[in-house]
Image (cartoon, rainbow, N blue to C red):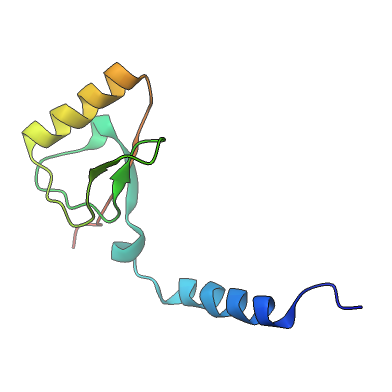
Length: 88
């Protein structure tokens, strides 16, 4: 018999091939919270490990937002990775 469903393979390959068309802005730079600076733009939604949405994609970081993110890390004991757009 067949090892993989041809329809699943076709769907997977279709999605996999899209990866090559992503730009650095789509993927973003993965930063620790101590590397964040006001004016940076989120390339992805920022979520806690529980799935709770903290900030949405395209959010422009402010000093206050960065401090709240760092506070969330301290209280929750969880290190966050924040994906921001590459600067042009």
